[in-house]
Image (tube, rainbow, N blue to C red):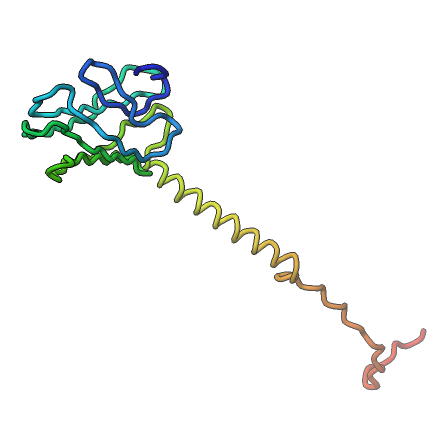
Length: 177
């Protein structure tokens, strides 16, 4: 069962100690799995969830769902597990006992991978990139406006034209010597 565990992202531990992959890296982030207890007459199910780092490191226990008081009189005890990994890295698990309709839930945040951005960091980075995009767009629009309309430019005024003015008769002429 543990073949190809290098690509396993989330797993559960089986009764024999092996990890059963629930999610693999690159798989869709929704799973529906039917589980049965390891032995007949089992009165409680403990389902342990493990996170496997992408670098192949040691799996980390991230959560446990206990389902106590399983019915002893039923031959087929079946549990339905629905698991979803949200966009923000939130793992939501619900385990339902088919016969009784009882549901146990678990929600937890997956550990961050080294070198990856957390959702908070990504949100801040998106906000900053959006602001830079808007600023660049406004600068481009302003530049185009200047180029197209020649806004802010003035043509030089023509120099004043002087006309020869008549001489003033009251001004004495220089005397000839």
